[in-house]
Image (cartoon, rainbow, N blue to C red):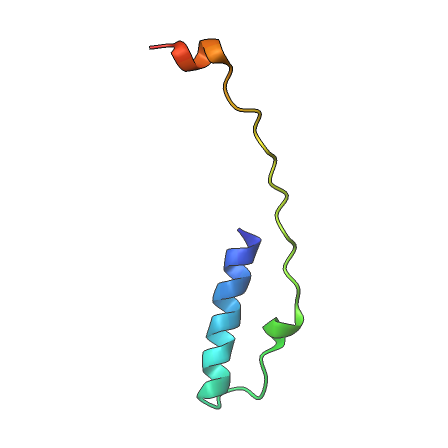
Length: 51
């Protein structure tokens, strides 16, 4: 969620720089935290065979 918000803000400020509304895009200086995705263990054989 934080990464998507950061991307939207960065793109909006990039457009503002291009249109000369602001001098620089400060959002490019910020590093958004990387998400911590857990890996699943998958299904067991009996779980797969359930109808």
